[in-house]
Length: 228
Image 1 (tube, rainbow, N blue to C red):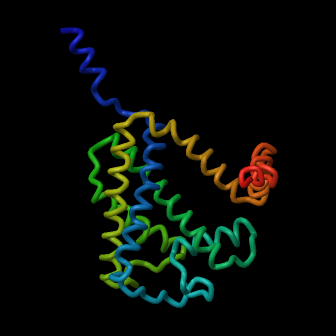
Image 2 (image 1 turned 180 degrees about the horizontal axis):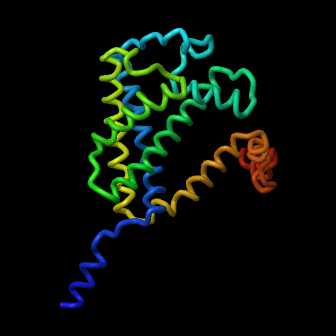
Image 3 (image 1 turned 180 degrees about the vertical axis):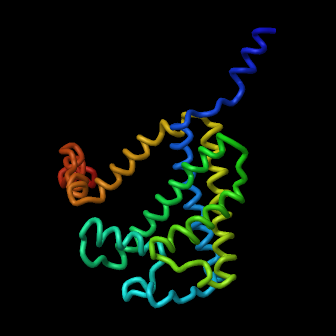
């Protein structure tokens, strides 16, 4: 009987530590942000026409930007003193802010998920209510909710519900698999760094330099001997 209890205890899923839950939640939140980006691409034709911002929020550089792109541009120009930022850099930085924002909310979801029963749908709606309707207007990168149409709010709620479901599914998978996914993060980062190195000028130079054995095998004498 005692052995059976020990086996059941070993097979029972164990809750991760708070730090482990936050790390898993941040990874899950970034995955949820990617799922939300796929939702935006899949529903681009049904996206409602954006409402023009009030005059106090209209700037020459931010008329065609999303709120997250505006946050990225202001961070680059203000905090990093980069000067005028190109639109391509602003778009890439906006995507990075999008995933970082999703990762931060994912960490909060993990703590809530381990503390009490959390609905992914209500979590996504809560993220929409706090971020789109409170944080972004407070930092003057978006207007307050009354300036937008109901169709825009309806579309944004659906997008954040998709984010909540994606984050919940990713966190459930990471939680059930235990520490194994976290152990692969350093290897994934190393592969990304190696891929970036190969695309850099020194990496291209290394790829061009071949060992002498390969140069000899590809040399003229060997080719002539093969053709003889």
